[in-house]
Image (cartoon, rainbow over the protein chains, first blue to last red):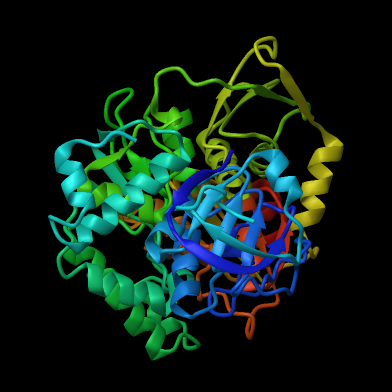
Amino acid sequence: MSKIIVQGKAQGTVLKTSNPINFLGAVDKQTGVIRDKKYDIFEKSIKDSILVFPHGVGSSVGAFTIYSLKSHHSAPVAMICQKADLTVASGCALANIPMIVVSTEEFDSIQNGKEITLDTKSEKIFN
Amino acid sequence: MELTSEEKDALNGKQGETLQTAYRILVATGEATNADRLVPIEWAHLSGVNYNTIGDAGEEFLREISKDARVKVKTTVNPMGFDFDHISEFKHIDDEFVQKQASIRDSYIKMGVDPTFSCTPYDIFDLPEKNTQVSFAESNAAIFANSLGDLKTNKESAFSALASAITGKSPYSDLRKDEITTPMTIRMKMDNPSELDFGMLGFFAGKVGDTSVNISGVSKPNRRSCKALCGGMGTSGTCAKFQFVDSDENTSEKVDFGKEEMNEIFDELNTTDKGDLITLGSPQLGLEEISDLSKMLKGRSFKKRCMVFCSRAVQNQARNLDYTNEIERAGGEILSDCCTCLTPLIDTNETDSVTTNSIKGAYYLKNSTGVGVNLKPLSKIIEDETQ
């Protein structure tokens, strides 16, 4: 069962990581490139992706990072998490990036690299 | 989430765009934390003050929102990038940085915040009475408030705390309730832990714990170690509260923190065996820590540059009590309104590596500043780096 945190509609390619994301420490706020070697998406850009990750971690300033990414046109078009956290929720709310939380089964079923659409007003939120 | 009619009006824009944005953030964070309503808060602490972390987009956002946003409750703020009193000593910081940082400072002041520029508000003010609802964005301060200050806060984000400051409200999330469930106990297996060990314990707990953890096998340590624990925990995860317990009987999950777990974290964050300079503080040092440091430095001098970070309020108190003389005589530079994490005072063009006792500092020095990190407890720093 999905839970809507921030309303909206998006289409894009899934970029999926098994690592919780520390937006302040690990993401370049202008380009959206992951710069922490410990991440399985190291050196990949989250720009224009549907970013699928367990949840946000670390600094509360990560919310500003999400806003900055949006201002630099480097933000994901939507985010899908397994667990909601305040940094990601509030960053997406301010930047108007649709965000949902999904169950473990749904999370596991989303494939990296797949083209999906997400619409929080639709009956089936993503497919 | 149930909103009052007044809150609904604000969310629909009837009280202007700024309050609409604030309520949109509160609703999203309320949904994220399973809150059913908003509750009043008495104190907000904001992060997102350092130009290095929020950048041009953040500076512009604050300049815009400060035109009409005003805080409704007592509001304190996190450190900036540098100490304006000492900026001329750091030639590599360009005018643009100084100007943008001044703009951010001015925007916050315009909104009516108390210009504390500190990550340790609990070291500056007396804490309100038990169970008071507050809204702290700085992660170490939120964990300190919940775990050691008997206050109630989420591990707020920069925007959720700002929304709380402007509205005087926060979602009534699980962490704000009287009874919260703590499913995990972390069993501390290390004897005589230093503050560095407590920082690593916190970093470990943040990784494995959910929103709250119990810690067994160790009694409440001194304030330096408590702060290191809060700082480490806030850096690595979502965990917002800990409590020291005598036994692990009441939780279903039990995880050991021993030599092996500690070494793994040490190897993750310690990248070199020598630093070009030393930083003390992250979190910023409190009066007690400054007093301790001045005693430890009696008759000794640093062999290399040492930056000592504390809040302006603590520095002023320390000067009145003469604690600063000994530290400055030993070559320590006391800096306020900024801290180790993401300060541009430490620059990769001039510095290859930093010695610190802070796990929180180490994480950001390594991953954001991009310098080598040499971790040592304070006692070892004094032993190795002074004469």
